[in-house]
Amino acid sequence: MILSSALIFATACFTLALLMNLWRVVKAPGVPDRILALDTMVINFIAILVLYGIIEGTAVYFEASILIAMVGFISTVAYARFMLRGNIIE
Image 1 (cartoon, rainbow, N blue to C red):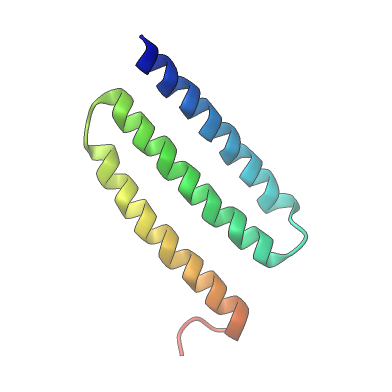
Image 2: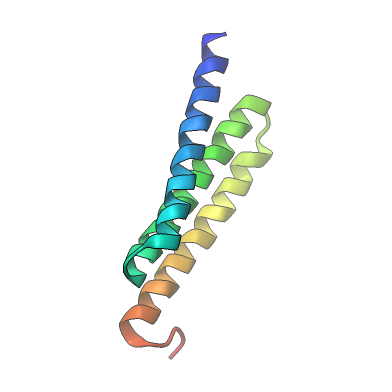
């Protein structure tokens, strides 16, 4: 009972954080702020996915979260490289 309530509360908190990051992506003053907000959105989405995997009791969501983490890392590096050099592939 207490564990399920804690999981639901944590999911609600991460969902709220995801919505706040979405707001930051839309209203950020600069592009680096938007890149950071997108990276934080990926982290929050991974946390929501892991919590949902715990709630459901299956390992499929953990594997999906690993794949999303790799894609999120690569996209953040690509965005940052584009901001520094103007191109991604040399």
